Image 1 (spheres, rainbow, N blue to C red):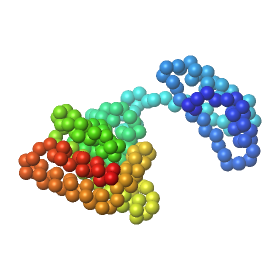
Image 2: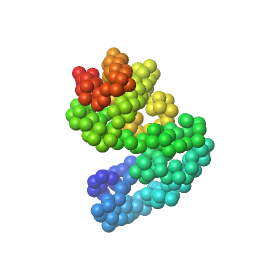
Image 3: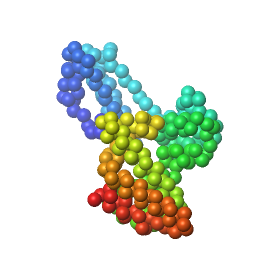
Length: 256
């Protein structure tokens, strides 16, 4: 619930459920950090509605709590064991911290790491983790698709110590993944992130991949990859800060 519920609406829902059917009613109530008293009052009121209903014996009321750090690490260790993943407790903790202690994202990252089929290192986490070193790069990618000033973002990355070659590798990896989504969707008509990436990212991330993938046509991908090829060659020849030369061109391909 994201707003105050009306008693009449609740009664209508419960009456509808009394009719024989396969329908179910799920009510999610989230605690407001600024007003815990209101949360308790509202949750108690909802429970009482069900207790007065003929369906009271079929109602289930559950409260969920954010796990503590040690509990989350225990869940991650159990998941790692299930995946037969060779990863130390120290690195599990590093993965969890890298993902801002988000348990669901860390779970998905374990699936990614399992694809390596080898003992996990800190470098693997830095390379494959959803959040490791990617936040600023994500700003650049977002800028490309939203027609923001990518040169300002690129300049900021350089001043923060990000190497031009690292930025290029990050962009290449992202657009390669986009092309995999593009080809999969065009071939099958479906969007199966696990089939494309080898793991299942959070739903909103998968949907964003699919949306961005379809922003380009096959010819557009060819032009972007050609730019990456030139960028790489000129970088190997000693030229620096090539993003100033190529990022605007990539943005124009995405937003013709």
